[in-house]
Image 1 (cartoon, rainbow, N blue to C red):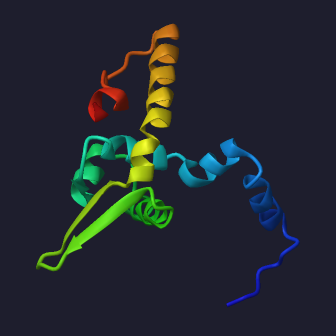
Image 2: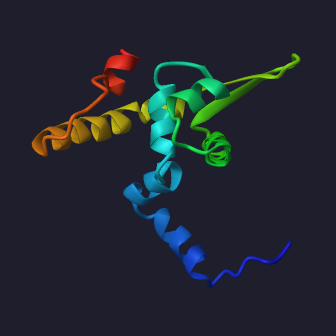
Image 3: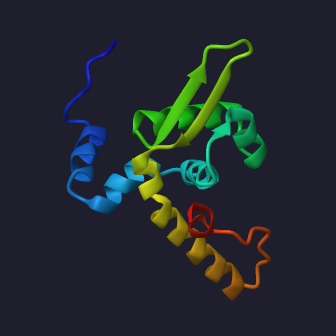
Length: 132
């Protein structure tokens, strides 16, 4: 494995992340699919196939990659039961549940902005409604 160049831009940016709370959050849940995965897990434990059905536009590679990253960041819990065929479920960890307010705020803003621009919305539920 190659050595990490400590003076690289990426390494410098990682140091800045520790100084800014918004950058810290975006480091954990940034990207297109992570907030959508968290939003879908807010309703409770789901199997991989249920997540894939709920988010049909995501590729298998991206879904698997983001699930692994969210698990590494302790935002979700992966539970594998030793049966054949494998039975794996995902659920929000305590830290992931705490992000419900952030994801809900994003959804609320989206509903308001879509209404402002006369964009029809297919979903009428929010994380707040789901978690309570």
